[in-house]
Picture 1 (cartoon, rainbow, N blue to C red):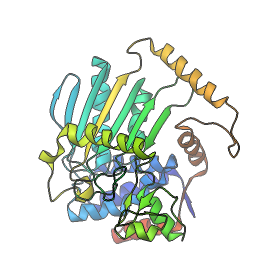
Picture 2: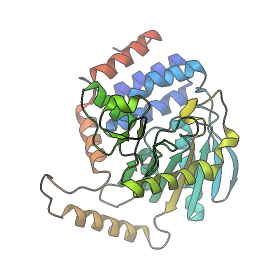
Picture 3: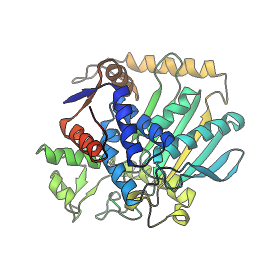
Picture 4: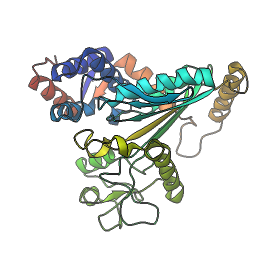
Length: 348
């Protein structure tokens, strides 16, 4: 295990990106997003993706020097094109615009098309919450080229992970952050299970014939993911698709040379809602903080040490890793070093 300070990791990531062709502001923003994910303990959305981004830049799927632009808008909405640049750049730009419009109108929605992987959705929900707003993120469209999730009761995939996030300010208590895919398990966790020779939890995936399995190899051999929560998770998965790809009409913006099979039809909707829309912000935050304290005061069930609220693990990881450094597995660190050295960048 390699341990590195967040500032050092940010420097390394930005130097690699610049060497690969990104300009300073794109490199800085992507480094910020990846390192913040590792700081929050969401390593599946951190620097593990850097080699893939460099490859996508090389293949022309990511344009590393462009900036987002507004295609159309109203006082309470906008449609943003990422111009096939980094998704982290477009997503931050869109949420900042949603916050700006939401402050004026009470609520605003900003859609994103023509962009790449946006990383950890919770980051953007947290942005809104830090401004005294409720933030929501709905992301879909990933199944148009390569579906990976079966509908409830089905045998063949038609949807995808369709993640969502929400953030709520809570005054003196930690921000409430919900951030999850609508599948029962992430594809990256299946790969980790295979590498470790471990089974997948029951109810997570099916094989290529639609039969339930706990074998990672069966999933990787043409299998598919299941929605979490059976019919309820499937319904939420479908709702995310409607609030993203279908709402934004992403097909008209797709480019066969950009985005790859997953991101070509991606649509992301960012919503920012004033937490003080119906009462003073202080009163909203007081109620939210009291709710958090009431939940944490509940006695823990057998097998649990405590009751927590969404966002607690990320906040605790962030505090610990800022203090002690970010742990990077030897495999991921080796891939970063290899990517750096291939570009003439020192990883030392």
